[in-house]
Amino acid sequence: MAKIALITGASAGIGEACAHTFAREGYNLILTGRRMKRLEDLAQHLNNKYNIEVAVSSFDIRSREQVINNLEGLPAEWKKVDVLINNAGLSQGLDPIDKGSYDDWDTMIDTNIKGLLYTSKVVSNWMIANGSGHIINLGSIAGKEVYPNGNVYCATKHAVDALNKGMRADLLQYGIKVTAIHPGAVETEFSEVRFKGDKERAKKIYEGFDPLVAQDIADTIWFVASRPAHVNINDLIIMPTAQAAATNIFRK
Ligand code: 8X3
Image 1 (spheres, rainbow, N blue to C red):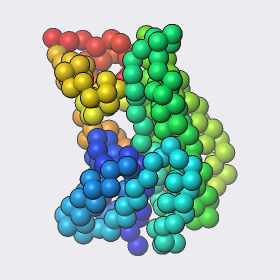
Image 2 (image 1 turned 135 degrees about the vertical axis):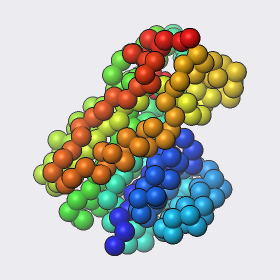
Image 3 (image 1 turned 30 degrees about the vertical axis):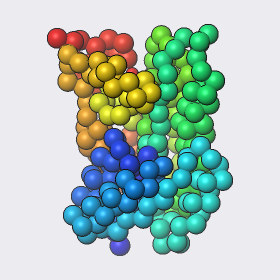
Image 4 (image 1 turned 90 degrees about the vertical axis):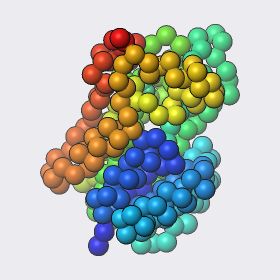
């Protein structure tokens, strides 16, 4: 029977690249996100190209009720999830702590921490019942370092780093693997979302060097997901060659 991967935030960027990669490897997929049309188009494309089955579920990961109801509402055969990719996450605003927006803070905390928690609780219970599983958490270099104006975003990704370690400790007894991937600069819609649609400002973030692309992260996630049963990669930091730290990028 084909394995199943559940990918949150699957409608774009790293989540979408993971969907392509796991589909190529023969996985059936559960794709979640807010943009139903994009999820449906992606599902159709992957179904046609790789002859795999795809379930889509559209909800706002910030809502505890929506996460629980939508995931628990999936048919029983879809609950045999082998790999959960906790990809949904975002940054909003890049302001000093005295000027930050309360709404931006709520959005980041509710998505990056609480949404990840809601999803992980539901799916880890399925994995315990199934007797195996692998949770892969998308952290960030912002979960390892704190940079000026990164305050709350960095705090949420530090929380992901801590939760990754916590889940690993708690789920050890069930044979469930837990891994975090911490990327540096990846050119996706990340900066456009951070700068609230300011494409010019977002573009400048990736100028003068070769940033990572979503597929680089998907390849890494596939690598960790395809290790033998006795091997768990706890966490990995992956950077563009031109980046040594969050704020140290060598630009030509
Ligand atoms: C994205 C990387 O350095 O902009 O998580 O925080 S960074």
